Amino acid sequence: MSEAALPLTEHLAELRSRLFKIILAWGLGFAGAWSFSEIIFGFLLEPATAALGEGGKLQAIAPTEIFFTYLKCALLAGFVFALPVIFWQLWAFIAPGLYPSEKKVAVPFVLCSTVLFASGGAFGYYAVFPLVYEFFAGFSSSFVESAWTMREVFSLTTRLLLAFGTGFELPVVVFFLAAAGIVDPRQFIGGLKYAVLVSFVFAAVLTPPDVVSQILLAVPLVVLYLVGVGVAYLFAPRREDSDPE
Image 1: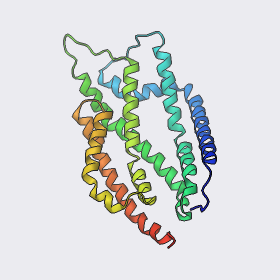
Image 2 (image 1 turned 135 degrees about the vertical axis):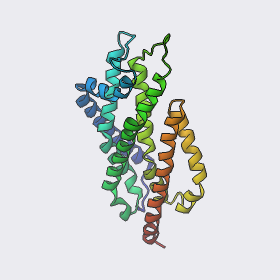
Image 3 (image 1 turned 180 degrees about the vertical axis):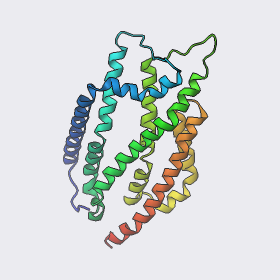
Image 4 (image 1 turned 90 degrees about the vertical axis):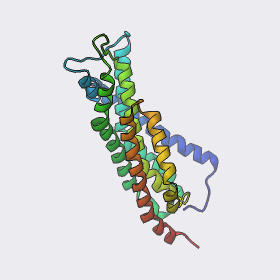
């Protein structure tokens, strides 16, 4: 860890530089995704259209709805494409405050963070989204026909995708809280009941009001919390050995 503390102005300049690189990477990802926004949109919304049955289509009820929904879709895709750069810039910003042995895990951090986010999104897309949309489509009847708008369905899909992707980052968060010495790994075990409660509250807030999607988000969060605690236990002794007396 660096002995000399950087002035606040240098920290702000560093932060501005990192944010600029993140926005640039996001912008390049958006530019690359724009030409394929319709294809990406069709892929993301396939669970919803499948739940509507054969020939099911989404509705656009405003003149600008299709354009702005595709625009948001390209922004979402650009964000996902830029994730490795985002995580790398985040690591580069906090690295000066770490010990030399901890700085060596930069590449594993970027890889694990990217893979975990992608895994969370994939889990939500393939395991949860079909159940969610089939649940809501089940309320159709002989006198009520589901006519979902593309804006609302894309909004729900985006919220779920980001919720699962962010939730699957939990092992990385636990790891760094332990690595920074903010929380001892033994405290994580003691706080398991609170972690379970927070996981279910987090799932209830970010998922639709159906029990299935809430459980399918909350249970993996608890499992990932325990995975993070296990990783923290493996890491903490090495940090203690490297601390100067």
